[in-house]
Amino acid sequence: MHHGQGIRLQFNEVATRDGFQMECDFIETDDKVALLDALGGLGFAKIEVTSFTSLKAIPALKDAEAVMQRIRRAPGVVYTALVPNVRGAERALESATDEFNLVMSVSATHNLANLRMTQAQSLSQLQDVIALATQRGVPVNVSLSCVFGCPMEGEIAAEAVLGWVARFASLGVHGITLCDTTGMAYPNQVQALCEAAQARFPRLEFTAHFHNTRGMGLVNAVAAVQAGIRRFDTSLGGIGGCPYAPGATGNVATEDMVHLFDCMGYDTGMDLPGLLGAAATLRQLLKHDLPAQVSQAGPRLTRHAPPADFADIRRRALAR
Ligand code: COA
Ligand code: ZN
Image (cartoon, rainbow, N blue to C red; front, side, top):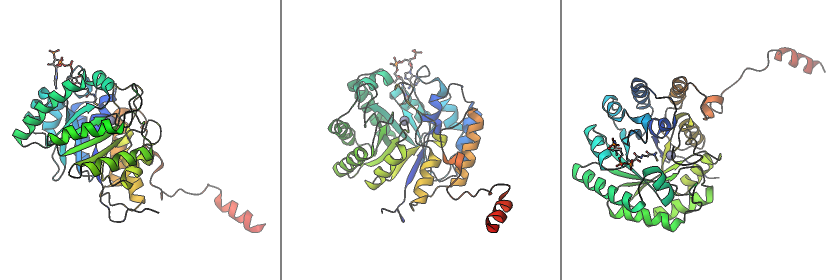
């Protein structure tokens, strides 16, 4: 049996970006800032604060500048944001964003639906963004959507995915996130793509990003870890999804993933009780139930009182 003794994992919280972009009611800027300040102390390597996208495309995150400027920066945490084009990069620079998370889809159809550009147009925009980031000394990560399948196109060939990774590697980005945008991945597929990507691009930092749309998020995460992946995007409460991908639902919940890897003996460095507290705050803020399970059931050694008539049950059993 594989066990994770001593292996360090890194978590990137995406609830305030991937999560909030899917919420119907606008979340007040003060509430976003308070949540982000609470998350800062819980052990995350990185927090995706917001996205500098068009206000019409993602109205939920129209306060990106205010949020990025007002949060308290916890030492050691990288505060990243999603950037779709040069305009977004300029906004992110003005708000002192630590890292740009660029986005494009390996599916031509999803790229058009989500970003209103062909893949060639996206690539050319992102080349300009990378040039600007390089000039200003800002590290760049690229999140590739739909790498394990597209809800409109179906299967996406692993070779095509690796081709996109190669293009961005040659442009000098430091990291690539392999995104399962609508929960189409399954464990042996995850293992094969993660192993191939790391073998071919040993100097790139890979992150895995799973959605739990078909209940396979956690098994896919275990497959990724066994294939050598050490970084994960997760979302508090399990909220999230791309508004331009049909059928999208939440990311794997941060608290569920941390609980799993803590149980398996990995070094998550995360404050699970603190996460459960933050999840309770998030639930109050969103006024609806959250898909995460550990925040409902508690950690595995949560002890419950026996039934009220337990003394009676025991007495009768012993008298038999
Ligand atoms: N920030 C703010 N405004 C922006 C912007 C940015 N990064 N990029 C474009 N805009 C504005 C333009 O100024 C223009 O405004 P106007 O109508 O008032 O003149 C409007 O948005 C449309 O601009 P255009 O360049 O034609 O963009 P578009 O409508 O083709 O949209 C994107 C392209 C990429 C900006 C938009 O589709 C987008 O932000 N998508 C994000 C999708 C996303 O985040 N999905 C979930 C994550 S996977
Ligand atoms: Zn996502």
